[in-house]
Amino acid sequence: MKLFQLIDGLDIINISGDLHQEVLHICFASDQCKKGSLFVAIPGLKNDGHDFIVDAVSRGAEFIVYEKSLQLPSHVVAIHVTDSRRALGILAKNHFGDPSAGLSLIAVIGTNGKTTISYLLESILTEAGCKCGVLGTINYRYNNKIYDAPHTTPESYEMQKIMRAMADEGITHIVAEVSSHAVDLKRVDDCDFDLGIFTNLTRDHLDYHLTMENYFQAKKRFFSDILPRSRKVHSKNMVINVDDPSGQRILKEVSLPALTYGIENDCAIKVLNFELSLAEIKAEINLAGDSVFIKSPLIGKFNLYNILAAMGAAFILQIPVPVIKKGIENLSNVPGRLEPVKSSKGFNVFVDYAHTDDALRRVLQNLMELKKKKIITVFGCGGNRDRGKRPLMGNAAVTYSDLTIVTSDNPRSEDPMSIIVEIEAGIDKGKYKKVESSQLKISGESNLYTVIPERRKAIEAAIDAAGREDIILIAGKGHEDYQILGAEKMPFDDRVVARQILESRSR
Image (cartoon, rainbow, N blue to C red; front, side, top):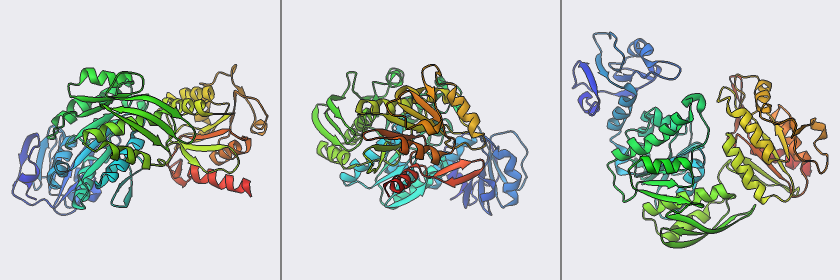
């Protein structure tokens, strides 16, 4: 593509060089550059792309987009812009032919529920005969192709690239989990969305956002800034959880029309009555005037909220109500989201991704409503992440569990025991008794916790301590099939480990 075509829409301060030259590649990592490349220098969280301009040029880059005032080699085309991160999105959109313009693009925003809603919508859209792609935490997938997801939401260049690939293969709808990082880092600023779903806002990512207000503003920016710029028009652009305080705030502060959902407050998509069990959700739902009975294999009240959100988005997309119902009922489970691990021992084992205090509290509250005997929780906290949530997670776990086993998650470069000490700081030692792992089989006692740093041994201890009709929750890692110890990524999947231990105990 000619340079003058590629830079259409950029906010340019100054440009030097021939605009009619052909640009062969776009790079934002200097080691990807070669002859004919355009390199975009982006200030990153750890490294600054401006420091790698010389390397990019040495590898063959002939065009440089940059935002800082500096002197560039005279033989390159220098494009000085106000915001090089935003420039990358515009360049990518132009380079890949503006793929989102011809697709139905749905964003799912919020702390919890994004992944489950994306799976529900994928199931509904597939039932409707649409060809659906998904960009999310677990993976990026379309047409039976599955790719690892390095980020919940891809970088802007990768986002445009994969949307182009999907469109070229006949995909008509894309469901994208859009993270607060992605909004703040302008990864989706140049995508035309059809609608956005807001689930909830609870504490997470404060290592990045620093305050809850900053975190809220990042989520809100999608609805107040990105969505209004879309060239697509629906009668309602937002699907908002009206039971969540931040959802109510978005409704007040953003002028876009909205379809609301909830269980407690008046709204367009409201649960009339429901029944929850360890096997399913049964609910009668008012869907903007239509009464729909849903019987879903998913578990828990929070999944009922996820079902409402998916129904709202599908309704805006004009999918018939019977198809919405069938699509929801077709989804049996979501990887790592209260995912059952088959047990012949008479107790239930679930693996869940809950890695914040609110997510852990919510899943345990749901299990408490369904339990017959004890809840045994195994969890830890990741290293090099928000330390403030560690005592909060410790408190949430012991409050709603009969037995809590504190272990390692992904300690990364931190000492696992240092993380565990910070988790224990949130546990009231006068209320909850710390015991040795050898004492876990004491019958009838509750309000116990123990520390077993090695995660496999912690899961073993939970399974050995469980009795008939107990519930084991293994929380924090969900779908992840690895554990990060230091700089090393080791194979480790809670579901596989639990299954192996259960099978060995059965033998």
